[in-house]
Image 1 (tube, rainbow, N blue to C red):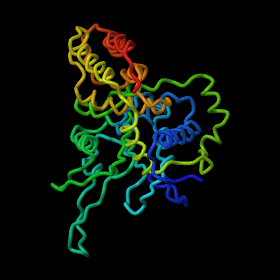
Image 2: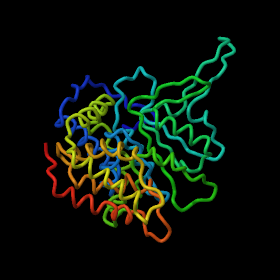
Image 3: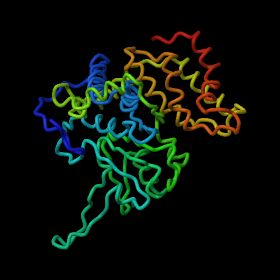
Image 4: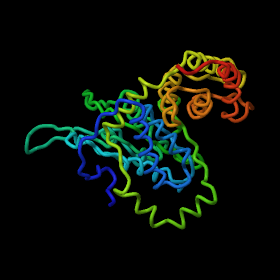
Length: 345
């Protein structure tokens, strides 16, 4: 059974028990992975990163060429989710196609006058959703980008001097094309800093591409109701459990501060990473530990997530090489020190 984008799956279900331990949180991860890998072929690494960001309460910027599956991945994630509070009038997923003529009210919502009732009422914009797909985010004006910035940073919107809260699950997946720069507005540093991850999606492997073509009808149909979904409450519960139950050793915190210091002192950089990036990285490390079946954060988590979190925040000096190479150099010494530390509780 297929569902229209923006609509919650109409499934009769009993209230699931609240998630209170890492085992139950891990089951949420497995259900998400199973459904997403059925719908999106050859993107297992990207899928893992999306799930980590969702559990870490972060936002994701996907960068790749048209037709690489960015939109398909976002819609598949929306199809994984059941809104177990259907009376809140919030869509499961909404898609915003960013264009140069878009206005802030087209995103946040606007106040409309009803002549019959002789009063104004607020019509919510597409930001009032659990998952928001911001397609080609760099094609809209800075004014619209700033409206999205408030929503991403504060989980709220302000229209006509009234502030309205967004749902706690609010999760943005933005996309941009790295090559077609005509008519675009590059994202400012403040906007980029609000994204937990910037993921550069490359072409899938030959075998995965062939598998996609051979099973095209099956993949288009989607997993339907044959695989279990997750509820909004389960995701929020899993976030809380991960924050409380996954151990972060003091040596991990020291390593993060040392990496940040390396990026600020390195001759290869013009601007190092912000303190906010370290704060955002903490729950991401815990979420990756859960995805990898651990109750503690390891050096492998730091090494794996550092390029996704730091690369879009660094300003690299001319001739310093690729930003990923600069991040790797800045991480080398702190990670070597971390390798000698005890990380379990």
